[in-house]
Image (cartoon, rainbow, N blue to C red; front, side, top):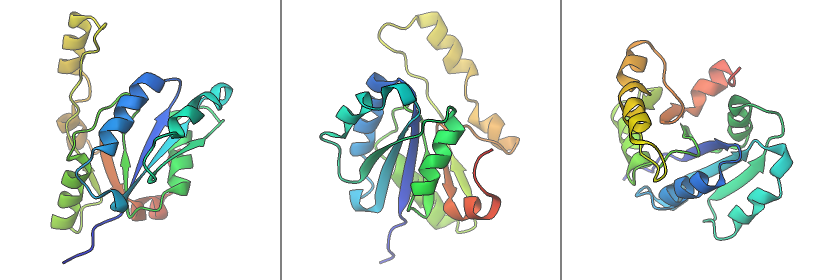
Length: 174
């Protein structure tokens, strides 16, 4: 049997503690074996470093939280990349709730297609309880058109997996 790919999931966050908890809960329930992936949360709010420490209580051992005081989600992602140990890097955001098979399905694509460097998929917008219906409907139709993005050679980082070798070759986000 082949050994599983090691995956690092990077989540930048900025004052989004409530939705981050939902994201982390979904990642803790992944079908992919826990010993084959890590989750790196990058707190990008230098004024609330202590506030995020409560999240460390009860987190699985493969989850970690680091602080990046320099503003910007891509600076935060780069901080996570510098710590990542996985052969594949997964990106999502603190306001995302990954499906239970999110990591497993991405790994299947990489294993089937050894030449694949990036994998992305659809992003379904969910409606928050206090959110307006019209705003949600508009966003669900117009936001994050991954098929269009892929045809144009891009992807959003809400649902993106990249082989770490790509970053080793081209460098970090600018």
